[in-house]
Image (tube, rainbow, N blue to C red):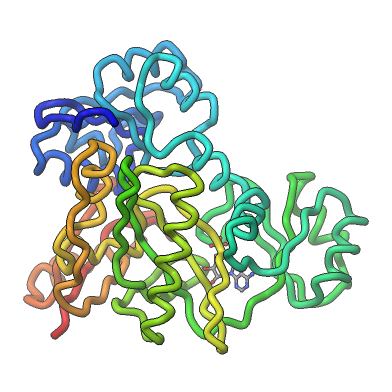
Length: 357
Ligand code: AMP
């Protein structure tokens, strides 16, 4: 087991978005410098970091130079190209989470197979590469079903709901030959997520289960604790621990589930990182998910995950952020703005946490 990374060292983060920005805040609080590597000019994370490199994720020379200056590298988005992680490791960097976790999370098919292999329950699924395979998969799984791209889908993008076996050619053609997965549609009671952390020595800690409300495929609101039997909280944490042990994972990982009417948890996807549904931990948990991730990757002891009170987190999407002055004047609202220059529709601009009881 390597020694903990001492304060004063630099932590490297791939990605320049709001998750990187909030990770940088937490790292700075623990005495670390943060170096951001992103392909985006003027990114939210770069503006709060000690140093920022703007370069392509396939630029191996730039990645090697970045690796030389930092004690450990982490990521704030899961679609880091596999060759970027490999180039960092070749240059001697310690990379958490490891490339295997990133690779599985980047492919919905691999992810569902991995869930099933570790005793989690995914929705019924089948790989689809041809129209004939789509017909066969739909006959097996039944309608309604959801056709998704295996890669690069997020926030409901890259998905089509199939209500019948008519017009399949049209639905299939819209994906332009990308490898696909067909999933059975789950009539869930609610959507929940578990945010958990694992340290290099196998220590594990999870936060209380979060209840998530999506609008148009994008997270709109999170409430903690999720309204469900305490046994479901325990089960979700046990499932997270199994996945993280199987991956020898270091850092924070999130699993999103559908909670079915009988109490079954259907594992929808995992994010090998801090997560939007965990933003409430900044104010309402003893250790925020951001600090927890920095602690884990720096080899520090995990922090306590106890929840201080019930909480609600509301995302500020697109023009919602124009309400900042009213929110700033609301004593019940804890306002976070990500410093994005432009409020595009569907873009996460900030969030508000309200503490209850
Ligand atoms: P995803 O990109 O897989 O996270 O999907 C985005 C949202 O679409 C989810 O949060 C659900 O609200 C919905 N969704 C995705 N897959 C399914 C499914 N198999 N059954 C029911 N709803 C789904």
